[in-house]
Picture 1 (tube, rainbow, N blue to C red):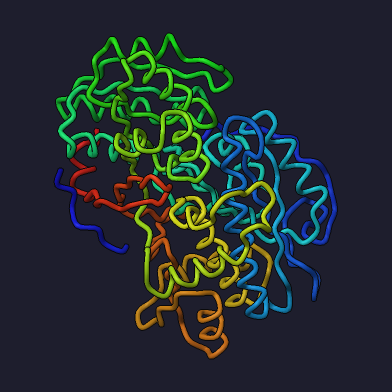
Picture 2 (picture 1 turned 180 degrees about the vertical axis):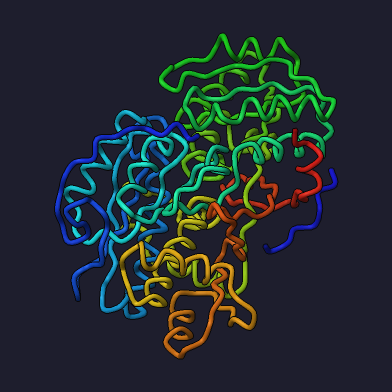
Amino acid sequence: MKFTTPVIGIVALAVAVLTACSSASSNSSGAATGAASGSTLTIADVAPFSGPDAALGPTYLASCYGATAAINNAGGVLGHKLTCKSVDTRGDPADAVPAVNQMFASTSNLGLVIGCTSDEAASVVPVINARNMAMFCMTGQSEFDSVKFPYFYRLVPPDLEESYAMVAIAQELHYNRIALAFGNDIGSQTFIQPAIAALKKAGMTMTTNQTLDLNATTFRTEAEAIIQSHPDAIMTEALGSADPTLFSEIKQLNGGKMIPIIGTSAAISPPFFKSAAAAIGATTFTSNFHADNLVVESNGPAFQAFSSALLSQQGKVPGATGDFTTYLSAPGGVHLYDGINLAALAMIMSKSTSPSVYGPDIVKIGNGVSGATVCYSFAACAADLKAGKAIRYEGPGGPTNFDAYHDSTGIFQVDTYSDNGAVNVVGNLSADQLRALSG
């Protein structure tokens, strides 16, 4: 295979009934206001902490703990310390809206929301936006490419680009016959149609398209259909126990042999590796696995600051277990850490903790201006701001370039695993490769 050399690198508007509430972070209309002097600012991690996608919430929370600890150690923000709060959406839009409304009703001095995955973003983004609350979301839904929510920010690409990335990986590995196996959740289903279109454009064959019920305990029927279609590889995203169970049953029904797997960036996480390795054996899994991932830095000052902050919180984050070094490549953790730093620095720049005031400075700090000082950690950037300098923050997720819809996306890297769960970067996918597969 010849991957390129690694570099550093609408929405269905849910009409939600917003509960009338009053707190230090809201006025009588529900809009966010600045926090009371000297109070603690809360960052809410709105994501699944239960259900099939339950691994996402703790992954994001780990980065929230790391980022806020580093910010607090550097003096906080405008006299405020920061803390993190988990808000469980259960990965279900119907559960997510009341959970978010309860968050607003019960949280004093809410300063930022992170998380909001593809499972629930379509339902909760309008609610959060109506409260004038800034959010960094981990949704790839393409609807957000062209509908502007003023308080919405995203550091991850639309799902269609990730579908193109998976097909590009298959091309590089010379796979021509591809089986699709995606979960029945909203986030996973959004990959299917772009993947089918990209496979057709690449002249490749889709052998079968299987939908995996994330609440099922066996996928024998789906495994048999995949095996009988004789694919060169399986493109998949089915979180929780679904994919590992499918892998196990394919191996059992295929004479002990595993069909190669191409996963999405969601597969680059400690819980996924642990489950997949347990299901079919670490060596069998790692020798048959590739995934796309957003390019993240693995050395340099931004990575060192991130690594130090995250590893300092091992054993302290509810629900996050295992060796935290494996979280250093988790895309959600990396980019939400950057989002928290961008928001905190924007508060300092604007001299306000109100999202309606500090929000525009997120873009200014992320994109920079001519002559801006590039800085790589909250502590360094805050010191530069206090010295009167214009800054451009560059975190472990690399430089940002926000557009009019507050989207900032980079290029993809190709990842594999070692048998111990370490993530290996084996190449990058160029913008030209993805463009060649687009509609």
